Amino acid sequence: MEEAKGLVRHLILLKFKDGTPPAQIEQIIKNYANLVNLIEPLKSWRMGKDLSVKNLDQGFTHAFDLTFESDEGLAEYNDHPAHTKLSNQSRPHLDKFVVIDYKPTAFST
Picture 1 (tube, helix red, strand yellow):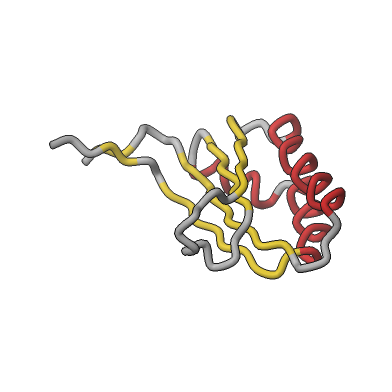
Picture 2 (cartoon, one colour):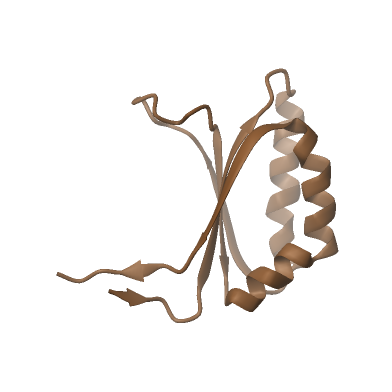
């Protein structure tokens, strides 16, 4: 088992509140995507909508997957005014969310 050198992943699962207009959801997604242009240690940002047919999503509809160069980069992101402002603007539209931070680890057999 070998951790990726320095890299940190930040995975967010989101469930928007019922009645949140699709245009509002799209704007929130665009605003989060733009953080990669504003916060230097944020190296990549990806998102996707749930596709599962197994009904195991617990209501989560969207996933954001962010990559940082280091633990310090993630800390800088968490404290960055652009992230704080966007989080505060988005939370009223969220029913629930989960955040997991981890270092990617490769397994060899």
